[in-house]
Length: 159
Image (cartoon, rainbow, N blue to C red; front, side, top):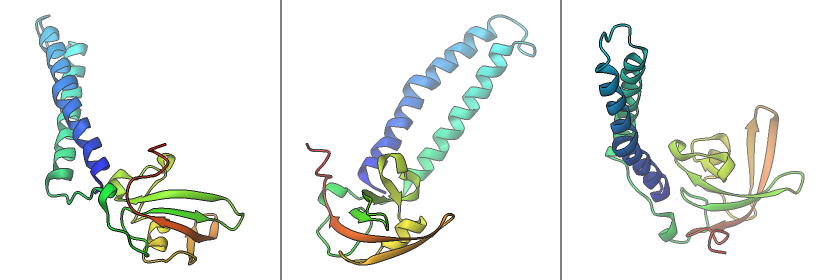
């Protein structure tokens, strides 16, 4: 997992534990003070929300428990596409796109973060600049030419 993905998960854990959960606990406490809990919608909803928060916390903590963190800012250069690489590729129509290869748990196509486990990610792994990666997508076969491979911080983010 990338350091950025790990930090995002840790931030969510922190927000759930220190902000949301205490708020819901307080709401449940106040609702419980109103009397009969069996017909108290605020109390019932609050308890349900607490279970959801606790479940999410458990899931997130398990996810980061034994994860290997890769700081993509300090990856050594390589001429091959590997985990953490920024890959600039061009499709059959001449449209180019730069993506970062990440773990499936931190994949976010809107932010150009593509999972190495995805069809595109698997097709790119191990390729060199100038290679063609063929990807079988639901809309059919697509070919991407690898234009550039970069390791380290995204140059566009430092502008």
